[in-house]
Length: 306
Image (cartoon, helix red, strand yellow):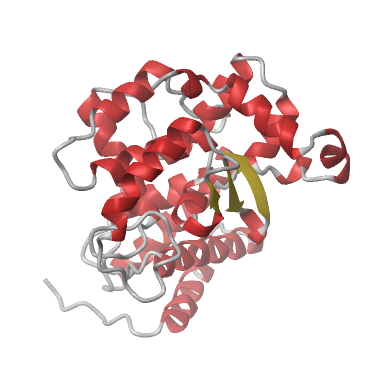
């Protein structure tokens, strides 16, 4: 096995990759530009998660792809991004930066399928029941599931959720979403109760500098990463015997689907999810905060189970 070339300078690595794809036959200028943008998206994700290119695994790439769906990127666009990532890792192996290609078995989403999996309320109960009550992290993991499902949060919003933005008495949380836009999200009594049960364990940790504002921490006192949330949910689904392909976004989609099935107003659900298309003056005129909170709490099935 030949010695691997060092990866010191990411910008230089991208320059080498750009030169490489210029030589690939049949690629249009738009495709080459798109591939570079796709790789930059991945590299930004890896930097955020503190993962090096050489430490990237198939599971890391699965988490990255799940995060794309979480922020609303369409399956067709995700398929294009996967093509760029595959090209990048083929280059890394061919040029002896890596021994193995973690993108080799990366699945391309079916572009004709627009909706992710939905869990039933019973399956969400099974997911929570699969949490080992004897582990120190059990209260945290229960709170994570209920907050994702009960508030319909993106996983990126969950890991950035701050304790100071949780208003227990008024039963809402202030969430920072895409584009750093904040929105008010009603907090169900069940989610509020489980967050309270988790706080004593969290507050007993040796919290790292700068991490104290954030709600969900690991046992080392650092903020949980999106990859860790993804791993927690996948493991719980396996333990519960749930065979559906699920991710943190599945809980968000289940939240919206169950509300819609229960009769909640579609615009109220869209506002809860923080979709930019309904963040308009007209919506804020017709949906005040009190009506929004009351509607969500009235229809969400979790508010009738405890």
